[in-house]
Amino acid sequence: MTDGDGAVLGVAFQVPVLDAQRPGSFLLTAAHCVRPLFDRSQHVRICSPNGTESDCGILFCAAEDVALLYHADRLGEPLPCVADRTEGDVLVRGAPYGVASGQATFDACLAGVEGGLLDIVLRSLTYVEPEAGHDPLVPLPGSPVYRALRGLSGAPVMRVRADRSVQVIGLVTHRNTRGIANRIYGIPTDRLVEILAAQNFTLQVTTDPRQTSSDRTILTGLLRELITEPGGDLMLWTRLSGLFYSGEPIDRILEAMLAEPQRYGLDDLALARAGFVHARLRLKREAGAASLVRLREAKARADRADPQDESGLSALMGLRLLMESSRSGDPKNHAYLFEQAIGKISGASSLTDRQKAYEMASALGREAVLAYLSDPPPWPADSVTAGYYKRLENQHLSLLQEYGAALRDKQEVVHIGLAIAPAIWEVSTKAEQVDALVITGKNAATQRSNAIFYCQMLLVEAMLCRRKQSHLRAFTLACLTTQALNNAGLLLSHEGVAAILRCVEVVDPSLHRLVTLVHKFGIRKGVEIVKCVSTENVEVIDRAGRIAVPYSEQVRDLKDIMTLQLDVLGE
Image (cartoon, rainbow, N blue to C red; front, side):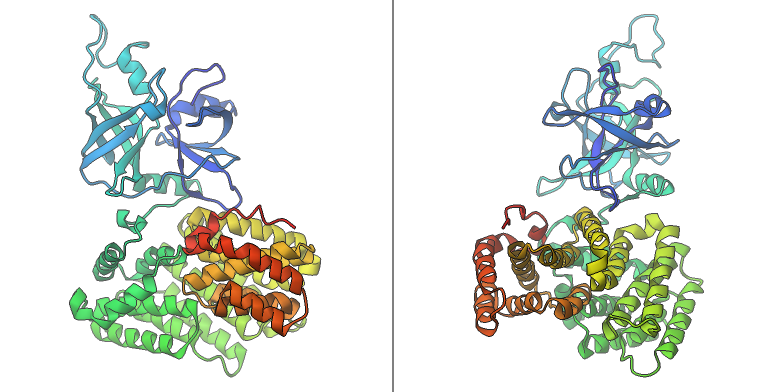
C-alpha cells in the first residue's frame, strides 16, 4: 500500500468477507497504516501481485489497529482464514521498503499468545544495533530495521498445511516495544472476527484446518471429533452444513458412522448429534419417511442421554419433527404449534442469544420453504399460506438484521432464496427484481463456495434467459446445472431446487421437461428423449445439448460449476 505520494504504508491482504451487495474484494491491514487517509476520506493506493496499481476504499479503522479496505473489482481468491493459536512455524508476508511482498516472506515462529496477541519471532530478521546516542526503543527513520518493520505492518501471519496451501491465522500490527527487532505481535483470526462483527462485517473462518481437504478419511476424523465434542450440540450444524453446501459428501460419511457407532467410539449423545445432523441434511436433499425415522431415533437417544435437555438438543429436534411431519389439517393450527415450538427455543436458558438467533432463523427459513412447497403460488389475495410465508420471511429478515455478523454466513443465502421463490412467479412484472436477486445470490454463493445455491441461481437465470429469448443459453445452462447436481447425487427434490422447479413446471414446461430428463438420464440421452416426446424448441435444445456435453466434463465436481466459464454460451 502507498499514499498519494508513493510512500510505502504497509501491507494489505485479501480475506473472505461475506457481503452479497459487494462482489469485489475485501482486504485487511493495520489501521495505523491508513488512518491518516481514512480521517481525510481519501483512498489508499494498492499494488497487486501482478504489479497493477489502483485506488482502494477504506471502510473502517478500528481502535484495535484493524482496518478493512474494499476494491470494487475481484482481485483474485481471498486467503482462507482459520482460528489457530497453536505454537509452531508460521510465515509473515511483508513488504519492506523497495521489496515486493512476493519476495518478502519471512520465516517465523509463533512463540505463543501474550495479552491476547500472537507473539511472533522472525527468524529472517536479526537484531540491528541502533546508532550511538539514539533511544533504543525508537527505530531510526530510514534505518534497515525501521524500513523492515514498517513494511510488516498489516501483513498476514500464515500457516502452511500439508498440501502446501496457506491459511491466515492473524494480522501483524506492531513490533516489540523493547526494541527487539525480530519480535512482532499480531491479532489472531478469532479476534479479527469479533472486531469486524462489531462493524457489522462477517469474516468467514474455516473452523478447522482440515475442513479444506476433500479427503474422506480426514473428513471422517473431523466429523468424529466434532460429534463427540462436549457442549458442541448447537454449533455442530453450522460447522458441517458449510461443507455439505460446498459439495462434500458429509451426509454419506455420517451415514457410515451411524451404521458402525462402536467403530467410531460414539456414545448415545454423540449418536443423537450425528443422527440429528444427518436427518437435517437428508431432509434438505429430499423429504422422506426414512429421514423422519432417523430424526425420531435421534430424539429418543437424546432424551435418554440428556433427560433434562440441558443442551437444548431435544427441543431442537422436536421443532424439526413438527416442521417436517405431514401438514394435514388446519394450517392456522400448525402455525400456532410452530410459534410455540419457536418460543421454547427462544426461552431456553442453556442457549446464548446468538445460538437462539441462529436456530430460530434456520427454522423460520425451513418452515417458509415447506409452507411454499405444500401450497405454492400463484396465491389468491386472501391466501393463508401467502400471509404465513410473508410473516416468516419478515421474522427471518429481522433476526438477520439484528444478528447480522453471526447469521450472515449461512442465513444471508436463505434470505435471498426466500425473496426469490415467490418473485419468480411474477417474473413478467418483476424481471428486474429477480435479475438483481440472481446477481446478489451468485455473489453470495461464490463468497461462501456454496455450489448448491449457485446452481439454484443458475436455474433461475435459465428462466430469465428464456424470457429474454436467449433460448440457447437457457437450455445450455439448464443442461450443465442439472448434470452438476446429478453428479453430486443431489435430487431435484432438494428444498431450494424444488422451490424453483415448482415454478418452472408451471410457467415453462419445456425447460422443466429438459431439467427432469437430463437429471434422470444425463445430457445426451436426456436431450434425445426430449426430442422424441416434444416438438417444442427441438432444434435449439439439440444444439444446447451438443454444446453442453464437452463442458459437462468440467462439472464432474459440483464445486466446479462456480468457476465454469459460461460467457462463451452465446446465441
